[in-house]
Image (spheres, rainbow, N blue to C red):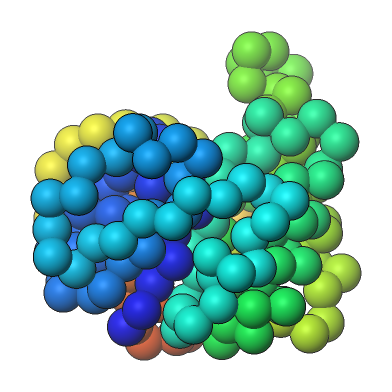
Amino acid sequence: MKIALIGSTGYVGSKLLAEALERGHEVTAIVRNINSISLNDRNLSVKVADAGDLTAALSGHDVVISAYNPGADSDGSTTLAIIEAAKRAEVSRLLVVGGAGTLLLPSGERVVDQKDFPAEWKEGALRTARFLEQLENERQLDWVFLSPAAMLVPGERTGQYRVGKDHLLLNNSGDSRISLEDYAVAMLDEAEQPQHHRERFTVAY
């Protein structure tokens, strides 16, 4: 496939980029600075664009994956610009890197609304929740919002993960985690073999 990847040099985006290239997809990395990424793969190209002018950069791709961090988006304008650009570019699907804060606990409450949710992460989690709300109001675009487990950290690529929908997934020890590498596997699996449409889902061990 031809994949446009927004945020390809970031914490999650860099793993998505590596996984997509390993699978042989043609990837266009959408960056603000051409010097932020090295062209070391024949299937990798780079386009320089900012949120206000994404349409041309996204055009001609089968799938757009957004690994943009909504925590940097104070008013929601950038995430909305990504949605609108994907529609104008007439791409088939928009896959979005989400957060665990919007996931639900057995009580039905969101993770981000708990008293013990880390204060330093809360603003970013709420801005990510706003991105999900923007997508939920979108009726034209075929979008997917993939929430990771509570702990998303570098680790091993096992190719294994469990799938849930809106509730936080816990293992037998009560932990919720997945490696960045296996999160990338799950995202590319969804890109290649769509299982979800206009909805959020989550993955964890």
